[in-house]
Image (cartoon, rainbow over all chains, first blue to last red):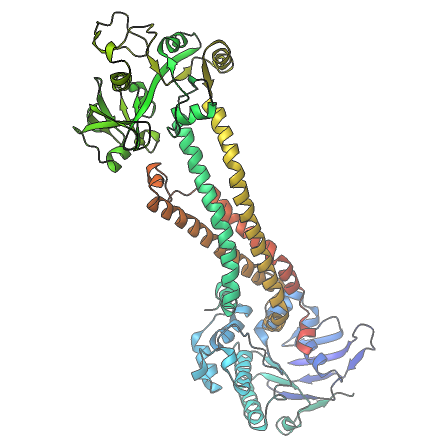
Length: 210
Length: 414
């Protein structure tokens, strides 16, 4: 489902980072570990097509995304990938419901009110449906971000430090929800983190050398 | 449902004061332009309408603009009188197709009484609303506004005042009778009362030439201008003569002849109204300049609002890209936001502009009397809308290009 082969990336004026080859089956979860600066985020962004111009091949769902044109990649991302970031990057001007609907809107998929309800219900946020983003607590906001990442039923979910900003209680809840929702939808989950609390939850782990 | 419009609207709503200020600023500028546009357009139309069929006005020497204002628009005082026999001479000129005499001097409740003949009302395609046309001296027909505002009805006995103001001395012993009321034409004649030239003479002779009154002789050789008197009368005077040319040659030769060879002056309505426009145009230009300054400031303000929002918006833009939005989509969203503001501004401006004109026609008596309408829309207003579209694009182009160039990896990793 997710496979990389001899991928390299060089920031302008810096030495190229070489990433070890790996392969994840559909529905498999994986942790990317490493010190900050080890290239976790770089690898995650390369996998998600947020960063380009690298060497090697990245195959996701039988598509080599390095071969896609810019707009085809955007389209692919909208349809097959979901993202959760460290700081809950929700669109401040919109309500929770509108934030969720942005995903199918931008991916040019049908927008379904039932799907919004279903996902919010699953994440225990149904009562916050019409809330403004700034009215949410940090834990709630991160759950909305997860809801938005899964609403289009992506094949792969990429999470970049999804729990580092949360306290233990919220970390527990958010990571459990993320894992169970991903499993329910048979989505592959790739989490880049240095958060030790997650190590016990995802057994497949890849450590990036510093 | 989420779409471009709800997305753009949500962003505008997220900063209500900012959006409101920008829209209002632009709206004010557009409103001023709209008022000037509609006013100018209707003013010019009215003037063209009132000038129709009149190639030249001949009157006593003086200011040509005054002569035109007095004889065509009836807003100024006569420059003096001309001799009837001199006017007859002119009427016989081969370059003249037809003439209409005007004898002014009296008014009723501030509405001017015009001594003339039916050719004058025919010029404005006047129709009777009720009653019949005037025939004998001392019979008058009232224009639509005179009937409405001065409450003149068929059969009313009217006492005229000398001059145009209400305080001019009344010609008490000379009563006129209203025989008819005209249908509204939305031209200058709505504000006039019409009668024979003879009526005006009769009202004034009463005082000035009492002894002349009784020499009632049958008219043997009727004047071509005023058939109730003999041609060549050296005493009778009229205020002015409206002339229609026989051919284009007359436009060059006739004014020169009249101004150089006679005691009269010739004024061209086309030339004088053009001059009037250029005088009024200065004021309009100042207002217009003010409007453009407002629009420029609002455009700058819209640009700055969008440009400044980019910094806080770059996370939003990057997130939208991660959800599958293409670069061009972000570009369009940004443009749409600018266009939405300028479009709202121009719609508000057009509405305010027409609103001001509606109030003007309601509250100002002159507004309704001139047949001025606030509910007329011109194609130039579509140009204002199109222009605001363009303005929106100009204001948001740079922010849109920035949005297009957003480096999502940098923003999301940073």
